[in-house]
Amino acid sequence: MKPILFYITLFIGIGSFAQSYQPQKINPKAIPLYEKALDLLQAGDARDAIPMLTDCIKIDSNYMEAYLSLAGACGELKKYQKAVTLYEKARSIDSNYFKVFNLPYSINLAGLGRFEEALKAVTVFANIPRISERGQKSAAYRKRCYEFAIDYAKKHPNNNYNFIPINLGDSVNTPLNEYYPSVTVTDSLLVFTRRTGAQREDFIESRITKQGFAASQLIKGDINIEPAKGAITVSQDGEWMLFAADISGKGYGGFDIYISYYTPQGWSEPQNMGESINTEFWESSPSLSPDKRALYFSSNRPGGYGGRDLYVSYRQANGKWTPAVNMGPAINTAGDEFAPFIHADNQTLYFHSDGLPGYGGSDLFVLRKGSNGEWGTPENLGYPINTIENEGSLAVSADGLTAYYASDRSDSRGGLDLYKFELRPDIRPYRTIYVKGKVTDAQTKKPLPSNIELIDNSSNQSFMKVQTDEVGDYFITLPIGKDYTFTVNRKGYLFYSEVYGLSKKEADSTYRKDIFLQPVALNASFTFHNILFANNEYRLPETGLAELDQLVQVLKDNTSLQVQISGHTDNVGKAEDNLVLSTNRAKAIVDYLASKGIDAKRLSYKGYGAGKPVADNSTEAGRALNRRTSFTITGM
Image (cartoon, rainbow, N blue to C red; front, top):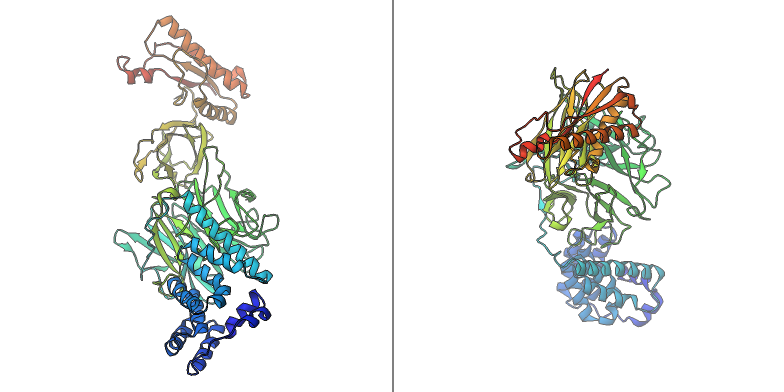
């Protein structure tokens, strides 16, 4: 009875319990077998103890201690239903003696999702006189978890969905531990970590095809040379690999975050990401935004809100990273926050926390970015994704339908395996579309590495900044249902600005748009796309200011340029009225440029009314094209 007596001593005190408990008479044949099982349990070998305890019960069907020890062993192996059945059998033998076991009984009930019953059981335990301080704290913690689960179920009545995690199979999983999955934006490559030794972790990849997962293999290149590494993530375009490692002579202290680049020979030698991100403390679990401009990670550096907090660093136009900043007390707690995963929509972040209210252990949460660019309130993913155990790191496919995570479920090949499951609709990220293309010189067709800024037309706010690769190619993902303005501003060229009407594009479709930049040259001209004046109005629309700011930047970069702003109308109305209206609209633009610090001597304006149409005025579509404003370089 050693485990039972230890448990009683821990939670209510041996004296009071010993006075009230009178053990039943036990069949002597079962005792030696039970003692051997106890030795195995104390050594942490629950799996081998189970057959012996089962035999004890066969010998003596009223052997309460054997029932309780067997229930505990089953609970340890997450065989919750078996454990609950065994606890209830023990309770039927002696309900008074069983009271102290209502705590582990409640935990196994919660493991099955039976939270209301679990709350009743732990309440019985909490009401036992003279429970130790440790027992009180444990009961209070479990009560909070069960109450949270019950409240969550009431607030999410449609939360019960068919949660069926599917093992990724022998092509991916082995008897070793597999964890930290990451997928590319095209859902074509799965990368993950595999523990291959006591002190070694290797990075593995598996191609995702229509037929399933290809045989996993060691990632090629120098990335796997170092043994002490983990928490790998791949950029959405598959060009960068980031991970945490403890590389002798290269770190700031302990685990730092490193980056490796894809080359024709495989992945390059890892580079430390520098002091803007790494410190002498622990940094790990990196996740890179789809535009590769924001890096989210976890660190236990001083100055946070608890153990491990989430931080973010931003990549500037010159390629350098800003000093990492804490994501704040609305996200970070006195506990640990770690394993962030930013989705391809660039607005949905999943992460782990054991400090936010949940089901017990560390839970998975989702965080969404609002239209103002600020993060909202973390939301628990709910049962049965979250359980009473510590949940594995999560990654979500670009289409937002499939989640990948690590678990040691009953069908694992051994230890942690990688699984996939379908996300509930309410916790999915935004559906996305893919936009790709190339930025080139309009005259020479030479590729131009550039920064592309996307503006959300509904809010007129900058939504995303994308850096093309060295040959001018870009590939981005965008939430569906919105229209965007793409702008490019490169020194020596006129800025590019064009509305991309993507609001009616279907999810997961691909849209190609090549961008041609006009070199700054005398008589070069540009027509504004977002400056859409109201009928008979010349007040600048808010939707056009971001586009005008691009022209401001061109004029500041090229201080000798002089420009003329031209206004045009369609042929509806009196010609003299249209001339006045177009002139006033051109002047409004000049006034705005001057207000931004551009010398008025460099600016001129002229209204042309309907005198220079670019389309047929007999159709509404044609008239819309004729109602325009533009600028022309008149001096250099």
